[in-house]
Structure formats: structure tokens, C-alpha cells
Image (cartoon, rainbow, N blue to C red):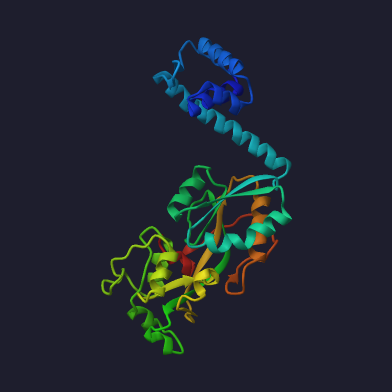
Length: 329
């Protein structure tokens, strides 16, 4: 048994068809069928039950295929480590980001990243923080961009920038006539929030000095899944919401009736960090990614790292000393 045999049986399992499996493996169907038959004879079991109409996986085949997938994943990992040693800026770089950041940040960096590092292929995922951390630990992602602190000894955290919050309200809202938005104003507005699980929800509550969701107002029971939904409600005249600085460049800024105002409050921001496993072998690729990101940030955010600078050799977080560390989620 070898890796070629593993790829053959996984292709049949995925396609449930010997012809399509052969096409996927770039071999003839007789070659693939014959090799699988030899493997079954070697193992002394039947992996697939074949009929003229279908290919079904036997119970013992299902158990063996589970191990086969793990074996192939480990073989792929070995190849990735080898490629990284040869050229860390060549190949896929799997980056995850929270949904209140990714739509506004990624369009700024995709083109310049491709232009400067044409062999680096960015593979993007957009999920909530908990899911991103889980996928990072399972090695499904190479690094993640999140806005909450992390205290895990096997992870490296690189703070990249602080992103201020802006208040978004309709131009007919009473706050429109005020020159300055105070902390007291934030505590009294009809506040629109995202659903639980979004770290932005907890961050907004902290900025507004609220311990829980508002229990009054027309939108008190709202559990929106996206920032765009909140902004559509603000545009319709329902309440207010806090918006991260990068999002104020969105299309909603034109002809929607929304006014966006930067909050001049000391704690009205969130900290965006790049998080990756300490064992990740292609740190140079992450440095290249972070350099492009930092170099193309607008002036509405505050950079915490210098574009193009290498990461510190031993980066640790001290959440107890950091305002951002007090934010759950």
C-alpha cells in the first residue's frame, strides 16, 4: 500500500464512481480499478460494494477510509513543510478573519499582495472568532485576524492596528444637532447590536458602558447576523449603531441618510491582531501579508506595527494590561 493507493480509494469514496475517480486521479479506469482490487486483496477485505448502478462503501471500508484521510492529510502536511523550507512565499496562505473586518479590509490588500507576491495564493475564510480559533488549532487555517485577546501558549499574537468606532445614526436623529457625542449619549440611545457570538457586540456594549443588551426600544430584541443589516435599519430610521472605522468606507455612506461620526472617547476602539501557531513554519509569508496589510491601511486607524518589519522572535500577550483584553468574545 502506498499514497497512490490511498488517493485512489479516497477518490472513489468521494465520487462513488470509478470513472470519475479515475479522471480525478489522471489515470485510466482499468488502471484505477485494478489497483484498488490489488489493495483489497492485500488487506483481505472488500472496501467497495460494486453494482452496475452504484458504488457503495462497506462498513470496513468506511473505517479504513477514515484512517486513509488522516494519512493523506499528514502526507500533505509533510509536503507543505518541505515547500515552506524551499520558498515560504510560494503556495497557499490560509487566512481567516471575522465578518465585521474581512469585507472592509481584504479589498484593500488583495491586489497589492498579488502584485508584490505573485506566487503567494491567499485562501480566505470569514467566520466568528470561536470558529476561527478552532480551525487554527486544527491546522485548517494558517493565521487569523481577530479583535479579541488570546491567551494560549501555543499561539503567537501580533497586534496590527487599533480601529476606532464611529457612531452611525440617521440624519433625522436628535443627535444630528449635537457637536459632540458623549458617553452619556451612548448609554441612552436606541442601540442596534449584532447577534451573540460576534465579538463586536461585546465591544460595543463596553464602549457604551452597558452590562447587557438594551431592554427597551423597537429593536431591543433584534439579533442581526451582519453589520450591513444594522446599517440598513439605521438608514430606515431605526436606532443607532457603532461601526468600526474600516467600514465607513462602505457603499452605505452614499445616499442612505446615515451620518457617521467618530467617537472622541478614550476607549472607543478595538484592537486587530494576527494570530498564528508558534509552530507554523512559514512566518515569512505572514510577515509579507502583514506588511502589505499595514502599508494599505487608511488613516482612520492607528498602526501598531511598522510595515515590512519582521515579527518579534518571542511575542507574548499581556491581556491584563490591555484595554482590548477586557473584551469577551
